[in-house]
Length: 290
Image (cartoon, rainbow, N blue to C red; front, side):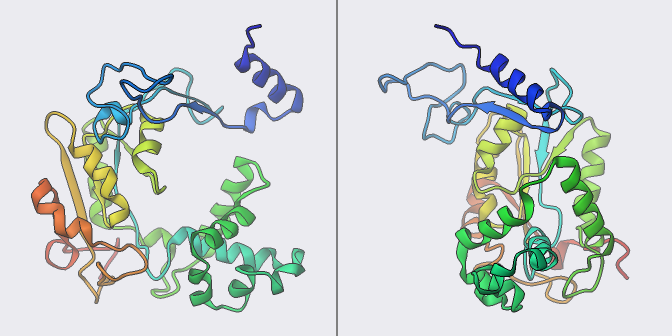
């Protein structure tokens, strides 16, 4: 019996009244092996699974997101680094603020880690909770709401939240040179894509369905993306932003718990990547900088 999964899912979402605020995403695993039974397959792209070539990453994907993604649309986008991530990632600061705001509704958090560490203002303990603990914070503060509700909460937070070190609004903690790069790319017909997940090449390919021609990063977390991007045929650009300005921003690289840049520095020259020094190359770091 053939089952029309798409039809069943559509009927379920419609009957549940959530069809207009539910994201549906369908994709597959990484590209196929050539000779592994029973999953072997061919691909028109170079390489296969477990390689860094396009055939190892490019897979079919379909997304339904009403009001956000137009049916049948395809984009060619760019990956880049955009805003400050010290002393903590902005997304984590948001989650921490949300835990504090939601705490009255969750008295159990006063004795439950990592929430207790947040409420005790113990950032060392928060970071010591590792990836699992940080994921708990994100899940507790990001789940159980519609996309529209989440956007409203984030918008309200951005309207009043300030950076814990500089005191500036987070909307002013973006890098002016990167904003100029975005403007330049848009003016020349490109669309831009920001991705901050661990499996960046997979996530990027799932969204845009192709290998980018340029990628910008600032840590070893971006290594795979730059490696994948610059391995493609034709002209390619890989850029690493090196945080070297301890006066206007922060100076950190190899030993930093946030945004560690070690392997990237060692291999950038051999891979043809450009390393941009904030101290040496950027006359301005943040907008409206005096």
